[in-house]
Structures are given as C-alpha cells and as structure tokens.
Length: 341
Image (cartoon, rainbow, N blue to C red; front, side, top):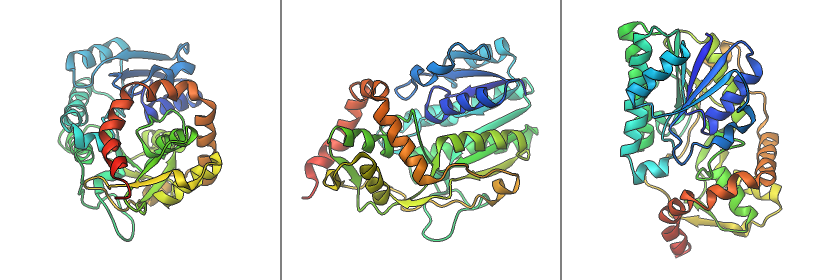
C-alpha cells in the first residue's frame, strides 16, 4: 500500500481517519475524494491542507469517469470507502440519495478497483446493518436485518463487497462500526446536536423515552480500528468495531449537560422516529483477536468531545445557520410543538 484513496474524507469519520493516517504512516500518500454535500466540510481537513502526502479531489463516487480519472492520476492501490449518506432521519425523508451513494457508488469503486488490480478494498460499514437486538451481542455471521433506508443501503453496499471477494477474488475487508463521536461531527447527530443546543440553552429533542441503547466509540479509536483492519484483517473478513460502551441515550444526555453545567430541564422528549432500533450491541472478539482494542475510556472521551465543541464555535455555528436549519425545522419543529401533549 502506497497510495490510499479515502472516499468521503471530508466527512466526520473520514476526516479523522485522514488525520490519523498522515500522523501515523509517513510512507503513505492519502488521496481524498468527497462530493462535498452538506456533511462534507473542507474545514475538517484544514490542518492537513499543506501536507505533501495529501491530495484532495471533489467528486461523486457514483461518477465512474471521475473515479477512473483519480485512480489513474494518483496510481491508487488501496481504497477505504467512507463515502455514504449516513443519517437515519434524512434517509427516512429522502431515501433515493442513500441508494445512489451507498449502493451505486460502492459498485463503481469496486469495479474500477477490480479493473486496476488494487491491493485492498476496505468498506466502512455500520452496526445498524444488523437491526436491533434485545439481549446478547451481534456477531459477524449473524443475519443482516436493517430497519431504515440508511442501514439497508449500507447492507447493500456491503453485500456487493462480499460478492466481489467471492466472485473475483478481490482482496476486501469490512468493518462494522458502532455509534461514533468526537470532533468535526455534523450537528444532525445526537451528541453534537445536544451539545451545541445546550450551549445556546435550546431544547434537546430526545426521541421517545431515551432508553435506546448504543455502543459508543470515540472517533480516534474508530480511525485506529479501521487502520488495524486495513493492515491486519483477513481477506474477505468482516470485523465488528465497537467501543464496548453501551449506554442509554438519556444517560449520555445527562452526562453532556453535567459537563456543560446546564439544567436537565432542557431535555424535551419528542415523538420517536419511525423504525428506531432499540439496542445495538457488538461482539468485537474477532477484532480483539488480531490485536486491536480501544484506547479511550468513554467518560474522558465524552468530556474531551464536549470541550472541543465549546472551544470550536467557529466550526459549528456557520453549519447550524445554513442548510442544517432547514433540516432541523423539517425533522423537529412539529415534534417540539407537540412535545408533552
């Protein structure tokens, strides 16, 4: 591996992965392609903009000609595919965009990569492809039962990756990550949404009773886990990548408010979203067996995350005054209006 194409590298996890790779692997060139939709933000890559081992291209992974152009210009030998429409709420409102990027885009990358004989293709997936689980933890061989257009699209992309490994012998790996948090996360997601709302003393629209359970993973751990699988994962392998931090949404919300010294009265229970999975839980023993474990403890990582949003209003305030405002109105205005009725 020398020239790694990171798709969706201006997004939240992708950008953190770019930082991680440039800091830890001095022999690699990191080439980013990003469509720069609402969630892609060049400010996420500001710190690496002058690095000679980094290159950026704007483009859509579903645009085959553009993808081929970048592969050839940069002599790409490895792909790490983060590019995805990734927010469940948006997938309920506009599912078509998810099919185009998460399914068609993954196909284009696989086909171009196959024709050029790349060394490895890493598909960044999600624990949401499993659906919900009441007891126990999901293992990699469990059936996929996605419950939202987002998770269904991610499952579709994953299954293509499997097919290319089985049919063409392409060297592929898949990681299924759990709920990730940290710097540069677009404020539609619960943690940055609640932190930034609380800073401004705005209501925190908490779905249902807040007893949904998520396994939380700090973004730098997610980046290091992907790097570890990229280097050490078995061809055709699928690896659950979780933090081992299962928490109720309501408890995480309380902790965020405590770090901000804000009252719990800001919490506003609202109507739950359609198809909302109750609990995710991952068995990560396969990944631990090949030598990776998370480095960050949840409470300290949460405190670090809250502090980042407090200290970096320059980053999130322009976002919340732009396109985000329309989405927030569509998603929450009626729910907040009906809260408590």
